Structures are given as C-alpha cells and as structure tokens.
Length: 340
Image (cartoon, rainbow, N blue to C red; front, side):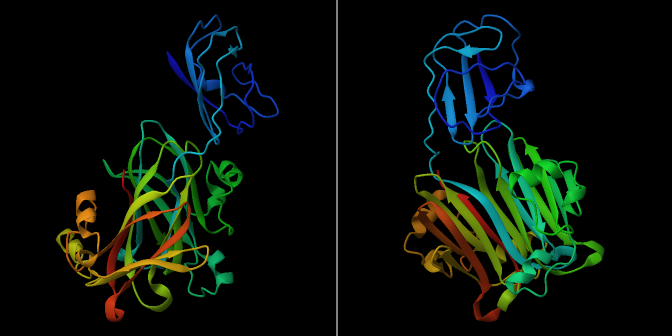
C-alpha cells in the first residue's frame, strides 16, 4: 500500500515522526483527510511524504495509532531537477477575439495547487499608464470547455485567505486571483476587462505545491502591438539542473482557426532577467542552427515565417518578447514548452 501524506508546513530535518490525523508540531502538520487507513498496526506499509523541500518514502515498519515511522525514513531535501514554475505574460488586453488567453498543462498523475492572477492597476508604479483598470479572470478546462472558476476582485474569492498566504495575491483589490487545486490536464485562463475595458494586464500561473507535478507547455494568445504593447512572457526555471525548452511565437498558422488578424511575421527574443542579457533571438524558425532539433522535439511551428528558440537554460528567471518584424501587429501565440 502507498498512501500520500501531505506536509502542509515544509519539513526541516530528518527524524522519527509521530503524527495522528490532524495533529501538528512546530515543523509539521498532518492534514486529516490524507489517511485511508484507520487506527491499527500498519506493519510494513510504505508511506510517501511530500513537502516543499522534496519527497521521502518510509521503508521501515510503521505502527501505532498515530502512525509512528520507526526506522528507514530519510527526507531528501534536494530540490527537484530544473522545471518550469511561475509563468506570466504581459500584454494589451482588448475585446472580443483580442482578449488575453493563457494556456497551461498540469502534468503528472495527481492534483496540483496553483495560483492564477490577472493584474492591472498595480502596474502603474512600473511606468505602465494604460493598465487594465478592472481585470476579470476565467479558468476553463480544455477537454470539455467547462468553466472551472471565475473571479473579479481577488478578495471576493472563497479561497482569498489561501491565496494571500501563498504569497501570490495581487497587490490591488480590484485585480483578480484564483487559488485552485487542479487535476492533471490542459486549462486556459481568459483575461478581459470588466464592462469591455481595455489595457495592459499580466496573467500569471504560479506553482503552490507538488514541485514533482510539473506545469508544462505554457502558451498565451493575444494581440501583439508595438512599443510597450508587445507581448512579454516571463517564466522561471526552478531546481538545481538546467532545463531544455522550446519557446515559440506563431502567427500565420492561426488562420485555419478563424483568426484573420494574425501576426504575419513574429520575431522572438529571449532575455535573462538577472542581467537583461539577450540569450537568443529568432525570426523564421527554420533559420535556427538547431532547426532539426526543434522539429524532432515536436514543438516546431507549423509555418516557416513563425519563430522558435530551442535552448537549455540554467535555473533562473527569463522573458520571451514577441513583436512583429517591421512594426507589424496582429494576434500571436507565445509558447514555452519543456522538452523531456
């Protein structure tokens, strides 16, 4: 038997542990609904414990009503290998087909808690005067187009306290936020302005728990304009190992989906946030030196005029900037895809 036990407070050391359902200690807290066994001797059952610092599996005997782990337990505090977390995109939100649509996939085989936000007024101190005054947020499950949750003003959300505690709550009360536990699958987060309002917004999807359950294949669709209204996608690679990614910017391949005002010739620039160094640029993905590897990854754009960068990146924060060649404007999709 293998039972998942969630540590709500990060483990800080390896030791012998004794918990009952709902019990807590200064470093650990056991959630009452994580047990599917009652009181009694658990024999040599194996228990997987997950925390923000890693996973550990008990290998020794487990016994007593409070499930004391007597031996063979070691907590691996090594962070997971490099993986994508905290993905966000900034761009101009308009109306109709030009709202901002961010897509993401929860991988793995278990639920993952994410914070999803849409900001606007809090961008003003950064010199963005044309911010979206009152962003609204809708999360949709892609498999059946079911609306999972909606929000307008994050403090009205039933999980507002959890969102605040996560550290990802928006800075302004009129901005939107959702705190959701999502099963594996594909989702979209749609950002629009209340009452048809327009302006610059940042949509973000942030990892709250289970770093072993990846956020993968992140993409955002919207209208790319010029100057401060180009599309800027930000992402973080967390962990200790590099991560290989394909980052793409599409345009003409959107036409078969009814998008006539596509960005005809997108160009892509990848920047390391720590020092604003340009890591790579591309215009026309087939001109990339590793175009064959992009094709082999399965993430190559469908049109030769679209852009893509395949790169292995060290842990850290990065931005991908999408704009039109020669100041062109139109709808584009920027995507960040993890390559196994």
